Length: 402
Ligand code: C2E
Ligand code: CA
Ligand code: CA
Image 1: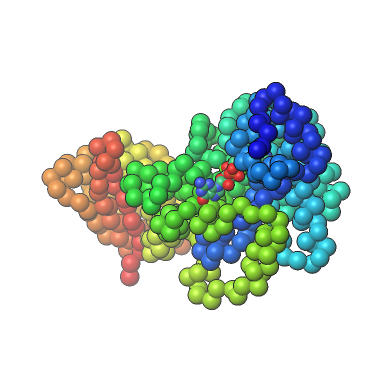
Image 2: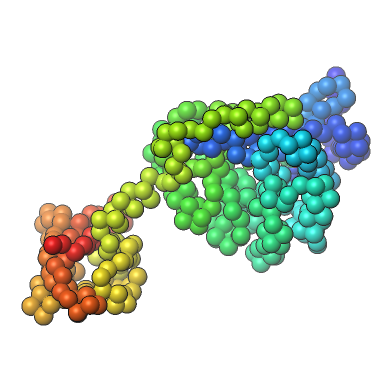
């Protein structure tokens, strides 16, 4: 029979457990979403009582946090992880970056980054092999201080990942401002087989957002092939979940790393290509053919230039008022084509045409390049309604033709 842990005895129990090294580090691998290779791992605490009973962190971590005793455990986990990595490096075995969880309470520790650096250096582990996981709720505490805290860790040479993204208060602003390099998407966002369309839209948007901020994404709690398939199409880079691996003790993890190191490289070019979101790939293909791509909201007279590369380098705004964009465009046209261009892309005329069933409109005009030569340019607008707001949108694709 195990001892019951409660808020009265946990302080003393955890101290003894740490002294006796009854707390074990379990490692859960993070796998490359495309080829399945182990590219990292997370260190997770397991309390193995003297009678062999194993206690899950979900039971004791919240208690330790509440009582302000979590710091001890986190530093212990870091030291144990470093000890493991240092041994592996010494034995010339293959290692990967391991992330360690640090509770939000550390944000208040002055000189956290110094202590972290000293600990890791003293144990002989290169700093790039340690990643610090901080939960989003910790980041949501108070702005400037947390950014300073995270920056000091980053400046010391450690990677930072934002843990449990999407589980609680989602603070997009913080993800934008905090110098993290990894975003871990919480398992609560993933249902069994990603069959719900709204759920897919939410996930696609999160991955898009993360990738546009150059964050590496890790999906947590991946249990099914369907989830994996969907995550791949989102360009998710790393998978952490029971589908590939459960958290495992040190010895098993060492074996898993050995296998990973000896596995042959995937030869299929599709499997070795860096994963990218399908939307981004599609856009790249479009930009290749159409160097000028504009998304406009005709109802609101605004535009956003998605790609701009032309033989004319005359400065062109990248976002602004649609009617001004058309005036600017007309100014680069051959005198005989100016009127045609302005008439074709008159805002009110396009909206009326859409309401009368027109879905696209194209025009060929002569446009002056910086070299003083006119080129024939084809400009096509495709119209659609924004389903969320009823606004009429236009996608403009433009390219020079022979
Ligand atoms: P976490 O940081 O979100 O860790 C991931 C949790 O998801 C782990 O739970 C892991 O076992 C579980 N998990 C991984 N893959 C799957 C899956 O496919 N399906 C399901 N259902 N679960 C999966 P675990 O080990 O019980 O840890 C719970 C939490 O306790 C962790 O959540 C973390 O917040 C905290 N924790 C664990 N170790 C430490 C530590 O050393 N320090 C601190 N501060 N917190 C820790
Ligand atoms: Ca974590
Ligand atoms: Ca997590």
